[in-house]
Image 1 (cartoon, one colour):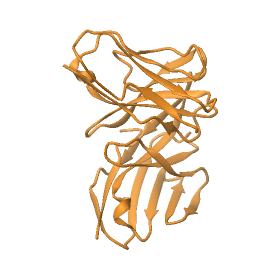
Image 2: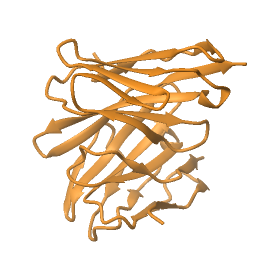
Image 3: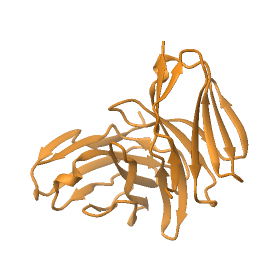
Length: 113
Length: 113
C-alpha cells in the first residue's frame, strides 16, 4: 500500500461544477496535510493545508479531513478552466531521523468550458 | 523576493559524467528537500535535510548524494549519472522540521544520454 494514494484521473468537470478530489494515507501519525496545484511543466504551488478534523474553506476551495478514516479531500467549487491542473496531496511522515514528506501521485483535473 | 533558486534549469549530459544541481533559498528555512518527478510515478523525495549537517534519505536516494554545509544551500550530486536518472527535479524548502508548506524551485530538467 502506498503511503499517500490518489486517483490519477483525469477528472473531467464542466465549468461551474464542483470538482471533488480524494486522498487516503496510511500513517496514522500524520497530523498535517497539504494540497498543491501543479500546472504542466511548472512547480507545485500550495493551495490548502489542514490540520484538524472537519472542513476548512478558502475561497472556492474546501479541504476536508477525517483522521479516523485516514482520508482527506479537496473540493473546488465553481470550477474554472484555469483550475485544469494536477492536484497533489502530501503528508509529512515522522521518521526516526527526521520528517519525510510523501506526495500522492496526483489527480489530473480537466475543466471543460 | 522569497524564493528557491535551482541551477541549471535544463541539462543534457552523458552517462558517467559527474554533475551537480545547485539549490539555494533566501528564506532562512531549516528544512530542504530534493524531489524527482516522473510520469505515472508522481513526486518522489530523494533526500531531505532538517538543518545544517543533518541529512537523510527519502524514498529514492540511490545514485544521489547531497550535502548541507550552509543553511541556504542544498546541492544535489550525481556522481555517475545513468539514463534512469533522466527526470524533472525539484528542490524545496520549508520552515521548521518539515511539517510546513514547501516552497518549490522552478525545477531542473535533466536528460542523461
